[in-house]
Length: 235
Ligand SMILES: C[S@@+](CC[C@H](N)C(=O)[O-])C[C@H]1O[C@@H](n2cnc3c(N)ncnc32)[C@H](O)[C@@H]1O
Image 1 (tube, rainbow, N blue to C red):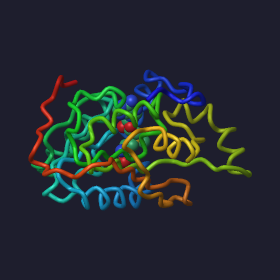
Image 2 (tube, protein in one colour):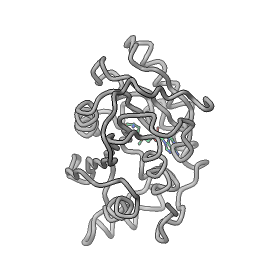
Image 3 (cartoon, protein in one colour):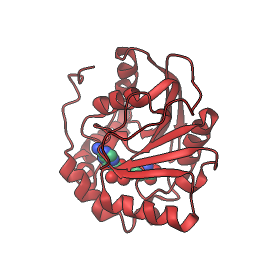
């Protein structure tokens, strides 16, 4: 699928990696509690499918201890300092169900097609330079019958909040994310992407400014043991 016309890259990877290198030491303190309900909702949705789960933008690994031990977890993030925190967390909690953590760009995943039963990305899609191309990549590595589970900011359609989001946008870019991001971008991506459909959109705190968004991939779910995601190249 080609990138949509209104999705010009307005965030670059260098800005994002610089921003998250700064966030890494304080990320859990600032964003731990505020996003907790969204993370728990995403984990519950992912566990309904189970099997092999890839967390993209896994960050400091704040979600990892909350998955059931039956789920086999992999995590990727573009920020090495964030990922180091995740490695420390895996060691601290003795998370033997975490199969690997890799520095990797969400838009260019080094996994074969149909590797995972679920792709989870919490508070990530609005931070990547090319959200639609990134969703394409999620769909590629997802098995038929699997789900993409996002928790993501959804911008206001109109009114004061929309004006404020657009006013704050340049400052937000420097912090490493977008404030304005319409739900239409998600629905249009699903419409234009063969084999993918939206299953659910549910408002999430704080203030319902975020949503849990689930996409399904057509086809029958296969046993999670059938295909092992042998890495093409580790980051
Ligand atoms: C707002 S944080 C979310 C972290 C975590 N998922 C959570 O629930 O708190 C966004 C994360 O996405 C990562 N990220 C941004 N762009 C990325 C990309 N292109 N590829 C992989 N990870 C990326 C950042 O480094 C950061 O760790």
